[in-house]
Length: 379
Image (cartoon, rainbow, N blue to C red; front, side, top):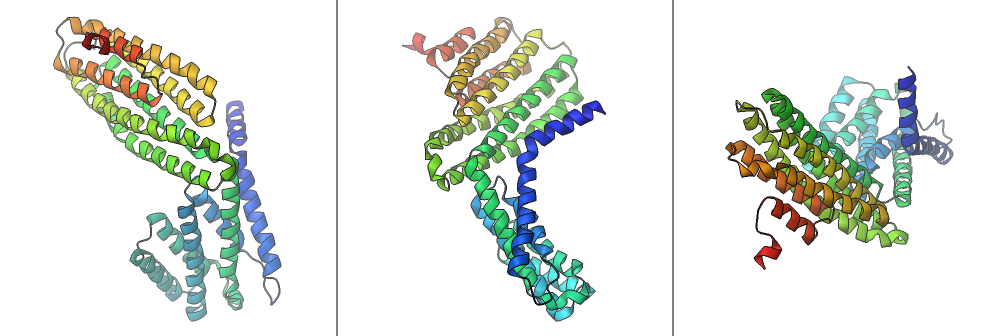
């Protein structure tokens, strides 16, 4: 119980901005709508806070264009619901059937995204199914409810973004590196146990990393758009540009990790045990991923001192990881093991470049450890 309470308190401390936004949006929507639409037997703007919560759920951490599309979807859905209530009555099978058919048909014909299509349809259905038949004379006030509530939610979400325009990018960066590190640790565990089934499981996890990389790319777009809406924070644009460059190399690291996970399946099929050097190298690679995540987070936050400190540490870990497996190349190894060493080197280079730690001395040390031609030797 004590652990649960501590966990709940930790979640509350980190999630209090969301609690504040939700409470403010719903309360303010009810207050404004009740003041603007009072009179004429209006019983209360019940749909204003509902629309505010719907729009706020979709608008947080997304591009303004998508947030506006969500607002349009909710209000158009409310309008369709009003028309259906007026023509067929509320809470009737006919009105529910017609409103779903028309809402889905219009959204599909307009080529709306899946989220917007769902919001439009659910908004219309909610209005028709929830409104008591005795309140049908309130039309079209529920459409105004949706417009007021959705607009307030959109405004609050953008004000929150203006205070911290790079917050979504920071969050997605943490998630991307964390899941990559988790997959690398899973590869290490599968090799340590020589477990083919575990290797297949971690390969499946590695294939899911693409969705996290895509979310990180979208977060860069969101941050870029947020800065356009926050001219007082334009000095942060170099941080977004640096993150955009880092994301490309994170993508390469993810692809090479997927290949590494696939090779792990072949290594676990071998009759001989996995070399201990691979275990140590993967442990170092996991640490390297964590260090690269710190560089990314510090760079996005604008903490140059912390970023530089972790950049230096990243280079040291990268060289150590490669030097760990280098002795394996002095003796003939099974093809999957040799392939894995090459893939480890590629992931090390990808993570170095994502952190901006690919200095010539570090790259030369890595290639020198594997007896590969270095820039100095070639010169």
